[in-house]
Length: 203
Image (tube, rainbow, N blue to C red):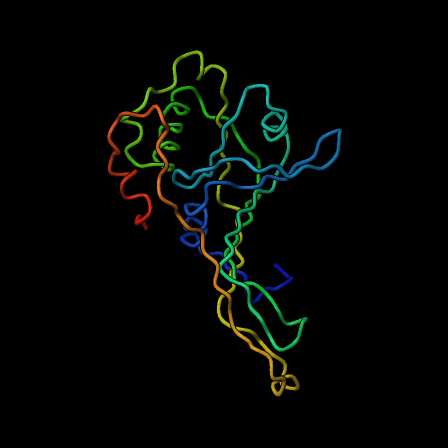
């Protein structure tokens, strides 16, 4: 990594932490109609990032035939400096390079269970699992985390010495994803399970 190399990191644990904190990734690929970058749901199992979609998905077909780049970014704050050009952001991001591969039917069922657990731990016990028809119409792909690089920034502004006398407010405007109170469906009569009751306070 050349641009912003001081923020680069290659620690596998950091890669896994950034992936685990995400529900959506962006996947860049190209086909005969041009270049695309598509958001899609994601989850991690071991040393792979997983996605899923319809068997007829153009993206999924392309991802098994060519290399791709997957990106995840979490914004942590806006950093205000004394100079307009020294303003920046605090963030955690990862880029994953490689080629996706399809998992077999047995692994697909386990992986989609893992996806449900990623969304809401314990949810698998409360809902109907996918039936044979649904699984037959679905493809699950995975990409190894072997070729992954992180960029992370934290802290305050890095002002130039000649700007230190400028009387402007400087510092960080923190930013965080917020969990809101659950909203039950009007037709729901079931009591809220623990993962719903604890949604707001969960780490």
